[in-house]
Amino acid sequence: DQQVKQNSPSLSVQEGRISILNCDYTNSMFDYFLWYKKYPAEGPTFLISISSIKDKNEDGRFTVFLNKSAKHLSLHIVPSQPGDSAVYFCAASEIDGQNFVFGPGTRLSVLP
Amino acid sequence: EPEVTQTPSHQVTQMGQEVILRCVPISNHLYFYWYRQILGQKVEFLVSFYNNEISEKSEIFDDQFSVERPDGSNFTLKIRSTKLEDSAMYFCAARRAASTDTQYFGPGTRLTVL
Image (cartoon, rainbow over all chains, first blue to last red; front, side):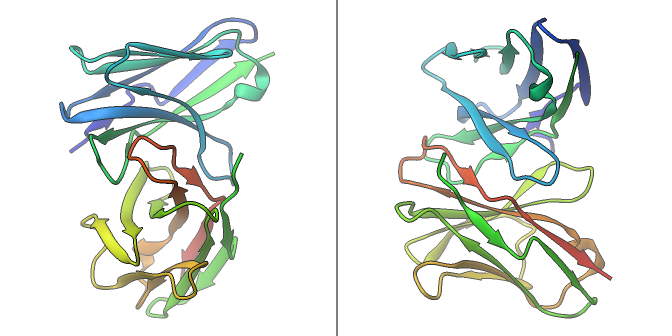
């Protein structure tokens, strides 16, 4: 039962270009979404979040878009840098939820 | 960024042995979590802990698992009798209060059960 899906296990992008990471969810009770970045041998690091009352949130090079009707969100990284190479996890939580449900992750490789 | 620390970084144990994984959350954080990630798989929720009791747990968190915060500082995950399939990275996370608050993760403990 995959409540949070990231259908692309990997993505390669040229440095300077846009990286678009996608995430789909099935639970309509999810109300809050986060993106985490994970380097090897480290814990997930918070990147950016969005709640369902918004459809876009921007923080520097990172923008998250939420389409609630389609149960879809995406993370845009512009411009992509080699240091962005990591595994990116989408995570979702219900209103007042205690825990986050994580997607399987997408490995982003930014090529110099 | 606030720092959650975990010890040990790597634990190797024999099947059937008990292990205790330790986490030192951020001091003003009130909610604590354990997650695990089996190699090559997604991060899975195990348990959440607030006010010295479990507030939510997943199906993975069976009777072999327990959590406590014995000294008000360290937050521990105990696996009573380890199985081979318990081999994974175990991440501790903490957040301040509101459900929309960010969870800050520790670096993880790699548990290897032989």
